Length: 417
Image 1 (spheres, one colour):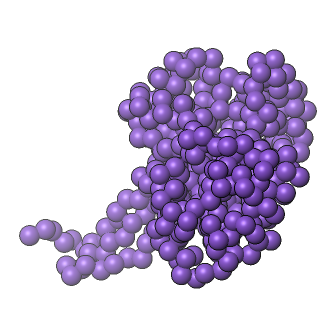
Image 2 (cartoon, one colour):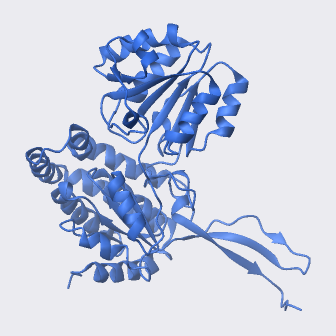
Image 3 (tube, helix red, strand yellow):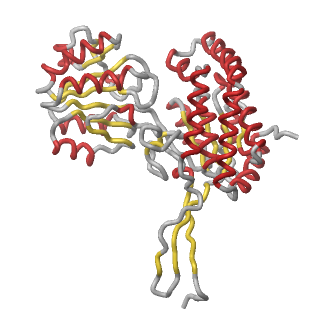
């Protein structure tokens, strides 16, 4: 009989986690290979379910950014299956040990990586997260409870069925990956209250969801608050590079968390850089909301309000402020940033190093787009989320972030005196 309550699902997940922890690398990789095969074989069924979700979302008036995240047509299914196969190629952290250290009493001690146990994922839209989370959790020996948003309920239902059948065919408990009902926020309340069954909760979505989970959870939470990402164009920096970084950061995918939301420009660079940047933004239909000085160089810009600083637009809108120097840029980032991704465009080694050292964010970049704060781009493979809290992970969370460490001690009969 299938579990019908969140607690029953968590109990099944706990039992599956015990089995997963003892599986070999090859057993887990076989299950992942079966997942990729199952996804491709069910592309049509996934697309049909996704079409229902998209139609319902449009009827409900969901934003274009959310619709973009929700879409899972054949190309997205193929990319998702390929991401699962990439996870297979990654080193399995479970069982790896640090070098043994011999203590003065002859004991040899080391730390060994182990799965966390049961992961609760709470997320909105993005049904590909269902697959990414399942793949990463399985590879790292964890079971996972997936509570997606109601806007993706049909897609996630099919994905859960495909994944469950695939891993079961490879000898892995199908309850290692379970879809939790998305029809009521009460399911979130129950999931985050199960501190005896769930080891970690990872929420991904809007700021309201993250705050709700953080404030009500009895289970440890990895926080991913909004991505208010900045780029500071320093004095003397290459204008062409600055334009490319702005356009890539803002335009490529404006609805994602590592998209550029605010541009800061050094006062001496503004007369040269801002007109060029303004033209490029206009060509890409990006609305500019700028400080009074910005309007001198980008006449079509709207005057920014206080609410625009620190805003995650998730759309083709960007806030622009002219600042007096590096200190002013750092002060702005410290006040309005969200510890996600912060970049500087500069030809000054000194300023670059100061930016790297003084900015507190999960990813700090020099002469590179904020869009690179991504598990795949940083070499982790598919990520389960980007943590903006520091316990126990900071930044994109790959396989190692889904494990803990235990001490292992080798002795020859030693007793403590």
